[in-house]
Length: 358
Image (cartoon, rainbow, N blue to C red; front, side):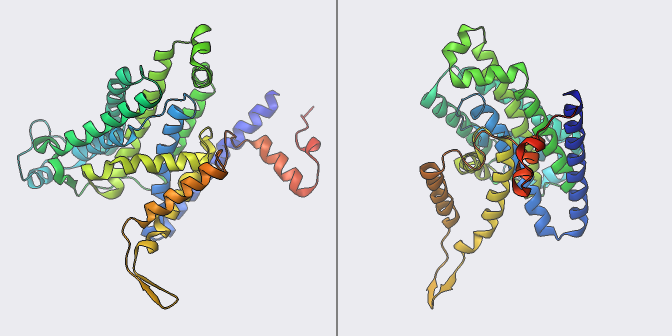
């Protein structure tokens, strides 16, 4: 048994190393556009995995991800823009201290964005997670809108509705996917710990979980704060990806995109979130042609702004009606499962594939 665990650990480490090497190679040999798509895939993976921690494992449906991502995005933008850039950019009112002199390196800023977002998540989760069901959904959505509107009305802090432009790019493809690996590792380790078992107990039956000694409020807030930290990191990477940030980028549509990825991949599967984030990201770009003018069988179709959202809405309805579990359901990738699948495909037999070494 110990040999098998050690072997799977080595295989997992080798897989992580292979992913980083592949991303390093692609970063230097692919064009700028494919690299951007792969970076966006990584960012969406972090957002979807963090949502699964709150919803899939704890059973708390939150619509606050857009506001939390906005916090991370603004923290990184304000810290990485130089004082001279901010002086030129703030037109309505000059930036206040310490915004006007703040300039922090990228890596510390990325961690700072996660920490500040986690603090905001704690402030939101404290009152909101005492609610249940629809009330929790409405409360988190309200907090998200409050954050967005507050940013739109603070011209001396974040330049108000005009946003921040020219955010410098410091990350590359291996760095983004390295952060994805760290995110997935932390979430998986948390889920497999005693805290994770408590979270699943809360999801399945709160009354029974409390009866056996699980502190409901503590574990709910823990999941929400950890999720908020990674949402803040993803929001910071998203601002750097766009090279700009403004309140209109973090409306409810942002959260609905995350929910679509989670439903597509499976609400209880981290592996499914990775696959669904890739499908969603690629389809988002590919379906841009639906919004462009085109000629179909000799009939000229004008451009249709927002057609991508309609296609994703139809896809979501199809999934809910015919495939509610998503691509992976609650299943996860495992080396043992891979050996079983290969054995079935090659006809070796399952018993030999899962046979324990003597």
